[in-house]
Each structure stands twice: as C-alpha cells, then as structure tokens.
Amino acid sequence: MSATGMFPATSETVETGDREARLPGELIYEYTPQITQVVEYGCGADAVLSGRKAPPAEGARFDFYLEGLVSGPKLRGTMRGVDYIYFRADGRADLHVHAEITTEDGKKLALEAGGVAIGQPGSPLFQLREHVSLISNHPELAWVNPIEVWARGVVDVSTGQVRVRGYAG
Image (cartoon, rainbow, N blue to C red; front, side, top):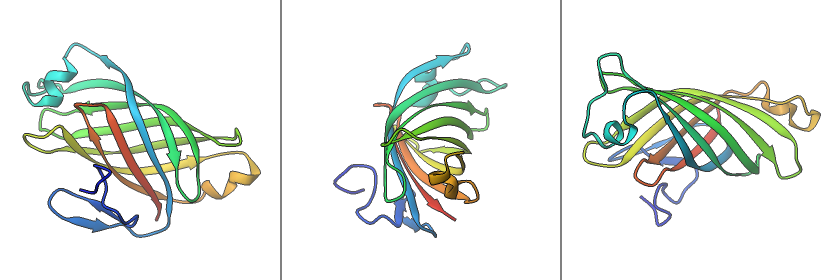
C-alpha cells in the first residue's frame, strides 16, 4: 500500500491483495466516501464484517449510507448514496450502489454500481470490484452516458472509509 494508506502511488494500478493489477482505460474519478449510517435487518453488521459471526443461511442484508468527495481528471464534487449490500452465506458480498454525484458547479449525475466485496481474512479491509453506469441529462455531462466504467477500491470496515477509482473501459 502507499503512503495514503489504500492505493499505490500510480493512478493506473490498484492493489488486489498481494499484487497490483493494471486497469485499462482512462481514470474518470476517485471517490472517498465515509459510511455514515448502517441499517441492519436482523443480523449485526459489526459481527459479520469482523468475521466473528458468519452470515445466516439466508444471507445478511445491510444498507451502507455513503457521503464523501469525488476527485479526478473528469469528475469533481461530492457523492451521496447507499450500498444495498448482501453478504451471502458462502462468503461472497454482493454490492448494489445507487448514488448521486454533484459536480463542483452544481450539476448532478446518477451512479449505479454492482459488484463484489472480497474480504481479507484477519483484516478489516475488503477489496471492491464494481461495474458502474453514470447517467446525466446535462449537456456538459452527456459524455458519461455511453461510457462503461470499471472500478476497484477498498473499504476499511473498522473506520468506514471507502476509496474507489473508476476507469472508462
């Protein structure tokens, strides 16, 4: 990991456990939201996220509310959203993110992402892999509508800090 704690120094690589992988395409954004609220549906998030308790046979659903900054060469501003995450009994965590990005000049775009969170045994870090759609009706942001975005990142569940980088694929 880099001095910033979650990413190596170069923008085109991300850490994937014990090695780094290159992501193709142009960097569109990096967002660094904080988990601000967790909604639980009968199973404690702390116990499941820490590995102290396995998800039940039917899985465990949580809503992680997120807020934070968006930076990057193409998009800058803030984001707010919810990850409707589902921890399956087999250990896989399915992501389902709906968020809004507000650019520095007040324009809005929608972000929808699906993917997986991959836990690291004995660590509070989860690696994130996302397939992202961006949508806006502002003429200045119409360039986001046709692009396909692939994103990778990390969440530290002990602090609630998330960091994700999205690349046009």
